[in-house]
Amino acid sequence: MIERVDEIAAALGRGPEPSEEGRDRAARVAWSCLIEPGDRIAGALVRARGAAEAWEIAAREPRPAELGALAGVDPSEARAALERWRPRRSGGAIDDAVRRARRNDVTVVTPHDALWPTALDDLGDHAPLCLWARGDVSRLGIPSPSVAVVGARAATSYGEHVAAELAAGLAHVGIAVVSGAAYGIDGAAHRASLAAGGTTFAFLAGGCDRSYPSGHADLLDRIAAAGVVVSEVPCGAAPTKWRFLQRNRLIAAVSGATVVVEAGLRSGSLNTAGHAAALGRPIGAVPGPVTSAASAGTHRLLREFDAVCVTNVAEVRELVGDGSDAPRLAPDGASSDRTRVLDALSERADRSVDRIAAQSGMSVPDVEAVLGGLLLEGRVEPTGEGWRRRLA
Image (tube, rainbow, N blue to C red; front, side, top):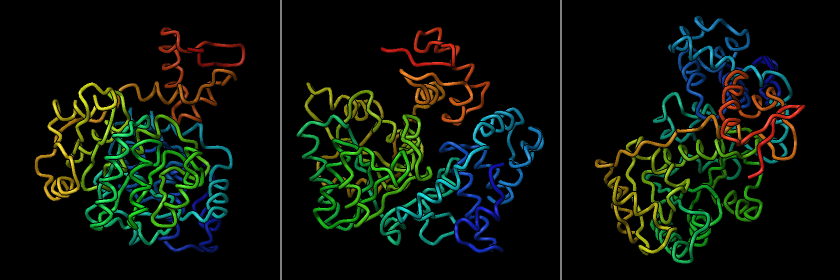
């Protein structure tokens, strides 16, 4: 494997003979550099054996049957996990992440810390193994209740106005606003909460040392000053479509309710709503003009998934206080492997299968299978040196 737990702990400044807590923290840092967000097999192994022992078990590459027995999963799932992890076993990813964290004042928070947002534990084996946080980490124990305010990037002036009104109103009554720092609704919600003197949390799909989107660099700095910028992927990690989808489960989990202000039919905020519903969290949706495509997704939530219609702060507060009738909209996990492979490809540069596997967090055989399907669809093309994504 990449490093021994004691060596990682020493790099984290835990001394040559780290405590059990130090070894656990070091192992969780290592795991976060090895796996993609939400890896259930890694989560099950860590739950069964502890992070440090789980890391040492993975380091010796056990047989699938042994790993399956230790983690309590099917051997075929264990085999797939081992193949998924293998492409990332080499390289200095851990050292690089630790150096970046130190340089950017990023703190690692684990479930053993008092500041850990315990609502994340509802994700079970899909919960993050640690969080990388920039800002006033003392605020990370997110106040209860808190509300996720999410919606379209290509928001209308109506949507941004409503998002700002709701976020400011929530801030005035001491409710933390959670969102994803994207353009549009997310940004409007963060800015309004800050302007009202409230606490706001931004969950990112890439490393929290990277300002994404770049146009929100100043906003992210302001959020870090008044709240926390958080990610489950290590410093330096790039945001990808898969990681955005997985990031959404964190936003849903830490929030007492999720309010979708404005969303098209394919908006990622519907994915956040799906995660919230699967966790039993209530969902609110703001109605918009029936002629607006930007509100088609919220109208679908209201029509098909029993989301609660919300139009003001009082109704959002009521939503937070009663989650007994939360809708049951399952998150869309379809085509996740295809998304991860396409994320790892370029339209200009050739990428080998090994490199695609390392970047996507998948095994080489799984990548080859997905590439075969994408080739039949005409979305990728083989080259002399590897594979490329075909120009649309």
